Image (cartoon, rainbow, N blue to C red):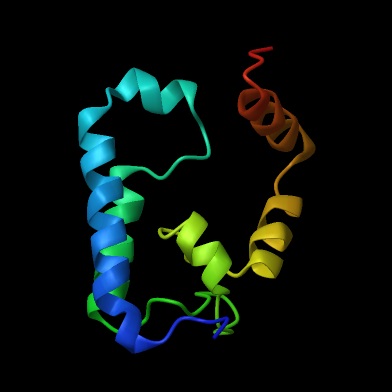
Length: 107
């Protein structure tokens, strides 16, 4: 099994809940210093997709999102291909800033 199946909903619900708890335990300054981590809003939206049975499908192309990606990033609404496409459509300055932030460098 390499894609999400509805029978896995309880496991992903627990995973999302644990990520939400971790977000609540961290301050907003932690979120600013660690870009790329899920925000509370993204996790809440993932919970809604789970309840609406839209979880595990890409919001753009409707293709299944791999289990590996969902386990790593349970709040992701996109498959890896669409996420890459979205990032490449960002202006170059935004991509550079994001890369610096991910590396911990603030230009």
